[in-house]
Length: 222
Image (tube, rainbow, N blue to C red; front, side, top):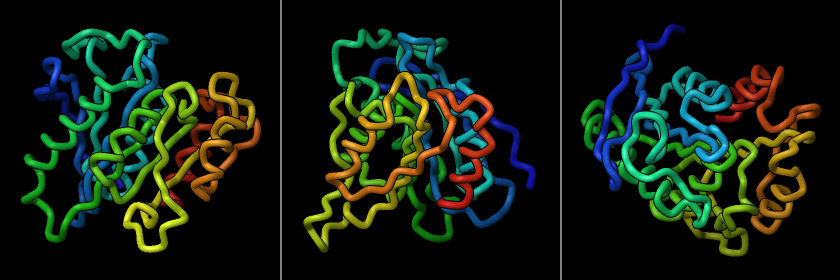
């Protein structure tokens, strides 16, 4: 199924214009919005990262209006580059701005209330955990999320039976050979929340030669 050609646009963020790429599914039924966040900019992370691009393509195939963007200070996005001294507070605000803009632009094109899917890789995954606290998405997809380094908040509250957040669909994908975000740190974060983690054998942080597996997991799970 072919998708519409991705379009580049700039949207207003809290620190200036944010460079964004958006694509719409080429069939009438649309499930919602998907926003994908990239790895840490201090280590070369941009929206052109291969894992981010793989997620972008998968969500488009699943029927989501899909967006990837560069955090503040990255490539053509305005603002100051993350200094590494905080827990991604500014980048979380960038996510909120992107979601608000896309919702305002496309909400009228849905026949039913659209789902919100937040996804992120590495640093971007931890940022999306913070954004999820405020945006209450229906679906969260985290790939090798740097939850320990950013002290990411929990997504689920398993001890509260009727908590809406507990019913949120969460997909966590992690390589067992990850040298940047160790598997154990993700397991330690997920365990108290009773969240399963999909482990890809032989996959390191950037999922070299495993991107097709990553995409298949997302397509099968979302």
